[in-house]
Length: 349
Image 1 (tube, rainbow, N blue to C red):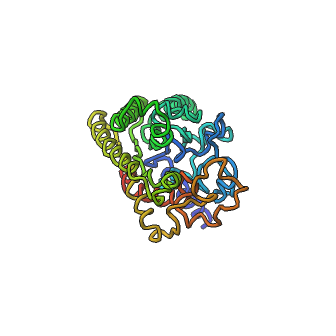
Image 2: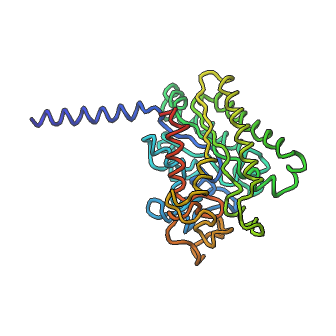
Image 3: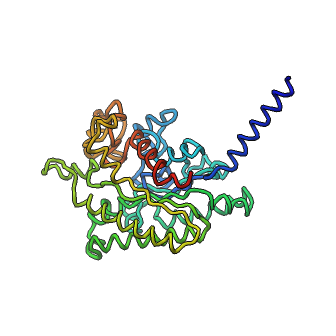
């Protein structure tokens, strides 16, 4: 009897191992900005950091990690939904190595954008450098898994891109360089050209499963509403319209790339409508505030202005859509991830 139990245990254990090894998506590999940066900015010389409280107060162990949220970010929840792991580590974090990165890694840097000029604003990692880190990662992965297995692993991994908001709100609408060089329409085309070429580069490097995020209703971020205070702190519709136009053009590019690149699985992650739905109907999602963020006054605080010494920070972030004036709460991230996993990302499950 005992031998049968042992045999059954070994068989079940083997099945679990096979299921784990033959997962449809063995890793989630991330590129982007603060929406998906789990702490890479901790390791570089920039003022844009969040590796201090109250950031991370609802993360595992209540520890700040460099994520711009009170807890986990959307890509963490995506990884968990695919049955991989509950959090994706930052590539530059010295606590992790290729064994950890094999099942998911993020090269993202808060404050970056498609445009190199955007990353220059706060001295963060430019988009092209994220690709260089990815090439370095590929080399390490081949050393860890072997060339053939690593190549298969990369082709089956989900490559996720999330950025673009900073290009407009921290660059185009703030500094005169790009706005004097491009109309909004042409700047959108410029950014989408960069995004399209990045996808082509990933494809050349063996990636076959790619998801690229569209822009949110960026005119409704608390920081932008604060700048619109004289007009009732309403959403800035000009920015929202720019986001909608950008998303439409991005979808056109995605359609073209799917025809151009044989064997690619490429989807656009459309978050605009879902975020706007939460903002317009917060109570339906259990939120009490859509206009203000949890941290500080909720009007303008972000990064070092959102610190433990601020007496105005809310006690329950789950009542808020936004954690600081620019970034979602963990609850919002979880809702968005769940929505994406059930819609655009369902193709990869």
